[in-house]
Length: 129
Image (cartoon, rainbow, N blue to C red; front, top):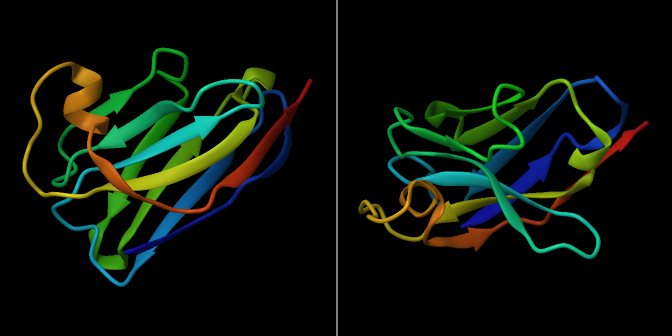
C-alpha cells in the first residue's frame, strides 16, 4: 500500500486547507484510516480517524469543531478539511491506513486510530500568526 498525502502549505491564522490522502497498490475501502501530525520537538499525535465504513470518526480535542475527516472510497482517497487554523496546528501531517480490517477494542482513540501499519510521507502545514 502506498499513501500519498498532499494539500499542505502556508496559511494565515483563521484560514483553511484541505489535505488529501490517495492510496495506490491496495484499497482503502473497509479499512480505518487516520490523519496524524508531528510538530518539531513533539510526539506524533492522532488528529482524526475514520472507520472503514465512514460511519464513525474520532477527533483530537484540540481540533474538534474545526477539522473534518471524510473518505471517498470510489476515489480511494481520504480527506482532512481544516478550518479556523491556528499556529499550534503547524506540523507535518501524515495519513495512515490500518493493517487489518477487523475492529479494535479499547479506548476511543485506539478503536479508531489503533493499528495503523501503512504510512505515507507527510505534508507540511504551516499556520502563520
